[in-house]
Length: 473
Image (cartoon, rainbow, N blue to C red; front, side, top):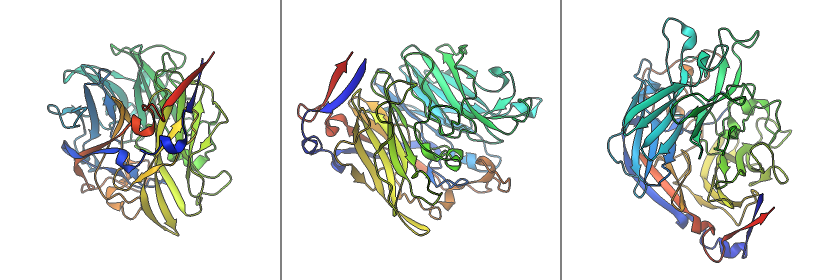
């Protein structure tokens, strides 16, 4: 069954209420249990971007959770810890004390349950050998107590040695959970030690599936290196294994866009390493999806400025419609970045991205755009712009609203303006091996903000300007 989406009235009527006034802001409502570094500095060929804060809402809609990496991680010899805070879905204020997951080195994925949460992170598991360090794990908590912890990398699930990154590396990955109580953990990996001949130092990606009790699920789709040298991660739930997982570095699989090698190496298309994901949206409980990413004009060099594209997937394995849709057009003086997509339901979605005006080596941030698209990825009406709200974590459905975390700050995407945030060498992928962790902390914050947009503001609930579903057998 295919689902097509149309509007029942003129776009002008639909989007009369779609403006910056549609934003519901909760500024500095959450006091963090530990300092947090909100920006990832320019890495390799990449540009500065927001440090992801995974955000999830429980199935019953009564609670939400936010995960973040303690800021001390960015100082040499610091204690590693991820904090997970339960929140009110009405005010986004803390409910109880945060759970401290000691030894966790990155907040890379989060699933909320009615009785707790599951965190995707990694731990240094070195014992007598240096080949088994930094192994990814799914950790399940019930009522603030650890229920189980399952490794999903290393020789636990592979017949050869593979870890997720170099020493003190980042876990570029995500976690999803479906209606059949199956977890999927998808992450970038790297071969080492007893890897196949010539593979050591190279890598790709791995998907691992785990059941509700923490047991690994045997599947021909699990523990495979699908995308060579992949740094870009996107994951969404599906009714059955496999879960859809587009990558920005797939050389031998069907393409959904035209990204070139340097871009995939920096995960530029999907937000950069440790970027906030939400780039693959499942439309309701269907098996239809939308993928959003940042692209450069095909055939242009690395100086070409970027624009936003969306591709509909008519299944978790097939590109639908006419392929990539331009949400924005490439311009000589405008750079687009930090794109995301999240579904209002099965007939439409929200696409967001940031823009900067570029002149020579200088860039000036001009705000975050919020655009409604239909199920085919086609823009509906015009976007509105906010200069003080951006997306810095997962966009989740909260009742009839889409909500996400961000840090209230003066955001400037220029590399010089974000120098205080890093990068700090061995904490990031340093191809030249010349950098090192800092001796002093990077700039940190102690408060988190949240923002929401209502579905009716996008025309998805009103009698006039609503989305209509038409079913075709």
